[in-house]
Length: 202
Image (cartoon, rainbow, N blue to C red; front, top):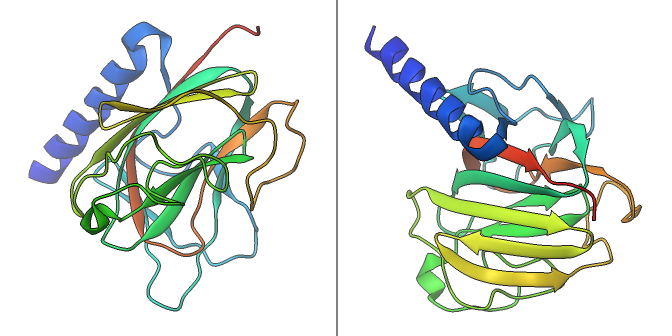
């Protein structure tokens, strides 16, 4: 009964967040409806429990990326994630531009590939990581080729032009709408409260 109450509370919270200013859920909190494995025959390391989507990858193992069925052009996407120390993942905008997810709180400073970086493109303007085991928040907006990212309340990218794919992309068609994808091949990571608001074409 307690578990059911907790799950209901989480689902209501997601629905409330989604209703806020036109945001819609990308993850329903119950299963992976609306998402597919990047490689259909790949190892499925994803699970859902208590409103959390978790990718569990043990040392030396590999999982499989999770790709949204829906594609997007201009949008604001919000999500929360949590990673252990040293774990490595990413959230891909249009399936081509990776927002780095890295358990790097112990480092205490920005470096190439830091948490929140536009991978292989732009380092964050300041260090904004939280410790392992804490939920971190992202709000990312992409309009045309410009990316703005707020990590844990700090604006770490402000209208950064990104007109190329940044690595491990689904394709290189940067002038077309694309899926979101959650990197699942080499690091444990948890996600919750994934919502998106589509914005008008420029």
